[in-house]
Image 1 (tube, rainbow over the protein chains, first blue to last red):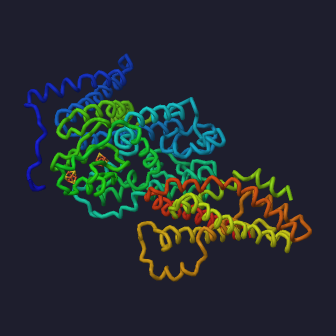
Image 2: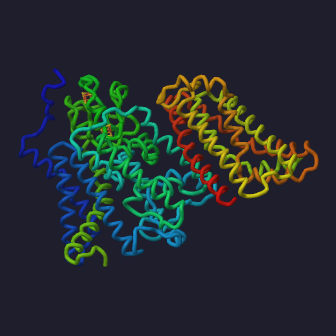
Image 3: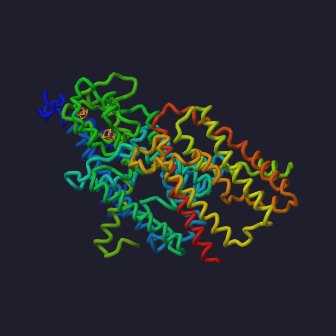
Amino acid sequence: MSVFSPRPEMPAPSTARGIVRAVLLTLPMLLLIAMMMTQGELPKDSLTRAVTAITYALLGAVFFLMVYKKETYKYRAALFTIVAVCFSIAFIANLVEMRGSMAVSRADMLAGETPFCHLVIPMVIIPAAFTRTIIFPGSLLEGFANIASMLILWLGASLALGRGWCSWVCFFGGFDEGFSRLRKKALIKKIAPVWTYLPWAVLLTLALISALTLSPFYCEWLCPFKAVTEFEQITSFKILLQTIIFASLFILLVVILPLLTRRRTQCGLFCPFAAFQSLANKINIFDLRIDTEKCKNCRLCVKDCPTFSLDENSVGRGKTLMSCTKCGKCVDICPQRAVTYHIKGTPVAVGSDTARILFLYPAFIFMSAIGGSMIVSALTRIFKLIATGSMIG
Amino acid sequence: MLQGFILGIASGTACLAYCAPVLVPVLLGEGKNIQRNYVILGQYLGGRLCGYLLFALLAWAVRFPLSGLQDRELVFGVVYVVLALFLVYYGLFNHRALCAGQIIEQRPIKRFSNRLPPMPLVFGFLSGVTLCPPFLLAFTEAADKVAVWQSLLVFFTFFLGTSLYFLPIPLVGAFNRFDALQKVGKLAAVVVAVYYLYAGLIKIAGGVIVS
Ligand code: SF4
Ligand code: SF4
């Protein structure tokens, strides 16, 4: 069969059976999301009740479509982008309400009021081992996004999804994912493979320099997402320089390069947490496999993988690289349907949807747990803006 | 001279923290096995010893030559910038080992690199003459000595004390079968260079402003 011949269909049940199957598989998820979102009782005010209902319907619809259509990528990517944007809206509105601006002052930092984010985790490990202190100006147990709760969330998601974190949980990843999907065709098609090692180099450097300076170097100097969350008040030349650096990195890595390449360049070529999180793929039971018999070596998956997690060698071996984020794009686009989700230790069953469904449950639970509250919070702010002219208060 | 050695032992972890961002990428970038890594460590430490002894001589000869803060900032700023340039050269151009993806056409560089001493030696020397807090302590100690040999001995024993902490690092050679680590080491050298370049320029600017 030529690679241009029609894509072999999944052995799909008839439409009615397909709908029944999808409904049955979606019901447990709907129940879980309801429990997570309401925690046993309905919100008291009508606005929160309405936005909770909208969010619930959105999450339920996305999960249903993934199951019914047997496609993962486009629904996940859309929801992932919505979560990132909502996270930013909710976070910034919250900051402005609490502090009056997006800028965090030295006093706030000294008071341990900086929310902890997962990107810092690889930097705190070496200093924590040597000095028994966490080199981050956040609170261990108190307040919103404290260090302990973030670490527990990260550990749970890493065990369940491995580097799937970067396509299902990370509330920043939706930004470069969103920009990478805006254009139909890539303008830059070839990126030298050596750059895919850059996240590891950045990780190594940051781990060493953070141990040397006993400060979260990435947060201070390099994190592009400060542009859409919070940043230090500009009170010196040094902070001005830091501001210029993070704003430039955001524009370049999260906006321009994803637009030009149709790839997630921040997540695939720079983020040190991404490299660190790739190690979690080693302990996670889910991976993606390629049936080398079915594969016609068209390299479509290699060209389109958003995080550069496939190369010719890996396709030849029937596996993805360690950096796979389990986004599902290669599964959905392969013209031969040669790629499949897989549970380690089981036979590779191309054509069966079981492993994908089994992966979708934990992945979607984490996505809803993190994203659901963000969507609710952002929608509440947006409705407030429409009704009162201000998101705050 | 026990003081130098004890000072070295006491400040070894700080020395390691200062040297690791240069040494670890170089050891990974060379991609050698554990035994060969000890040779590279030997070159690095040899360069570092040369740097120390040079300072010992200076400390003795001119009785604390870098007396003013501004001079010190300026000198160490320049050393940082030079270190950054060598790190970039090592990561992107050095033809003796696999460079980061052969990104840059190398022919004119080849002639230049043939004339250079081994890179670990250069990095060791530049790290040796770079200001770090434990080094300053040794420098102050050596500046008090009357005879040149005493000054040299303080730095030599200080060097021995701190070097003990470097001994486990060549064990990264256990992973040398992973080719990817060589590329990571080379790229990390470039990323570290960006840090030193920034630190150097800030020091130079600070030195110029103060003076
Ligand atoms: S697995 Fe990749 S290379 Fe093989 S047929 Fe599918 S898209 Fe093409
Ligand atoms: S290998 Fe496939 S599932 Fe993994 S990140 Fe690439 S496209 Fe997504």
